[in-house]
Every structure is written in structure tokens, then in C-alpha cells.
Image 1 (cartoon, rainbow, N blue to C red):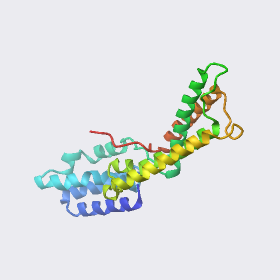
Image 2 (image 1 turned 180 degrees about the vertical axis):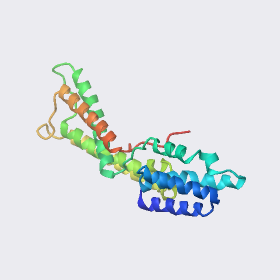
Image 3 (image 1 turned 90 degrees about the vertical axis):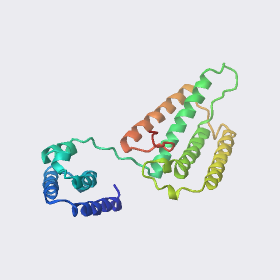
Image 4 (image 1 turned 180 degrees about the horizontal axis):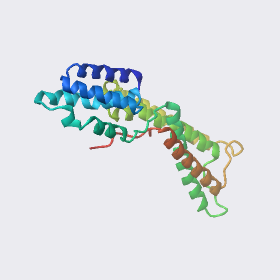
Length: 234
């Protein structure tokens, strides 16, 4: 969690704690002590308390106590400690571009390779050259990232939609980079074979499968957000 957000949550917690009754204040004091003894980080403690305090402040107006709402300190501690750890997500530009590159290279390469396998001998192969595939995947990876930057990131939970670019700007920008992608891809395909070697279709399929496997590993390892991912619909 970003430092500024963590500090804001901590300040919010302090404000809520000032409104607690003596009994509920003692409960939170004991819970904090138990959380520290359980070696929870400051971030984990702050988040856990922030999930409790607004409800506690509101419900204590009707006479309810923290124990009635959350159980004993020991019971609440078990709930917090045993909670599954949320995997961190990465929206680093370089990692998202690499994710897109590997995806496009894998998909384009497999399609191209499979088509090449079914072309009769003696006829013109339909597989793309290696250089064309690399260039197309690299530029396409940038296009996909820009889609995330201008559109999809604002569909994520908690996104500040006020910063979303105007629709016409988004259309112009994405239309321009997509056109560049198309021209670059087709231009690279016209390169002479010495600069754009045609791989054996089976070799191309294997390389593409390895690219997809590498993408899967990196996505799990770094929690890379997909450029075209949107918030799930409820």
C-alpha cells in the first residue's frame, strides 16, 4: 500500500478511536496489543482496524459493544491473522508491456505456425518472419498498454475517474497508435528474408508456447495486471 494512503487510514483510525466509549476503547487497546504480539505489520494492523472502527463507532450509538460485534479479542485476532493474504498487483509499465509482448508473440506465433504446418509443400508459406513477429508484438504490447492507460485503469475499483481523458482524446490517441501498429507490422513483413528469417512452423509453435509459458510464470511471480482487464461486473 502506498505510504500516503496508509497514513490517511491511520489518521482516520485515530479520529474514530476518539469517538469510542471507554469499554470499546479498552477492547481496541487490547486488540492492538494482541496484533503486535502476533507480529502483524503496521500496514496489516491499520487496515484491520480501519475495517472495524467505522462500524464500531456507528453501532455503539445503539448500545452495542465491540465484543458483541466482533467477538472476544482472541476470536477477532484469529479472524485477522487467518485471513488469506491478498496478492500484490503490479501495474508497472515495463512489466505490463512485457506481459503484452509475450501474449501477442505467443498467439501470433502459434496461429502463424499452425497455418504453416497445413500449407502443402511447394506452395508459399503463410508464416510471418521472426523479425516481423517481434516488431508486431513489441508495438502491439505498447498499444495494449495505452488502452489500459487511457481506458481500462479507470474501470478498476477505487480509480479516480475524474482523471480519465476526454473520449475524443482517447479515440484519437488509440486510433493513431493502432494505425502505426498496423503499418509497422505490415512494413516489417516486407523485409527481405535475410532480415526477417522464416522459421520452421513447428519451431515457431514451440517458441510461441514458451513465450506463453513465460508470461504465465511472470504473471504469477509479479502479479502483473492485464492491460485489458476491467473490474468484474456485479
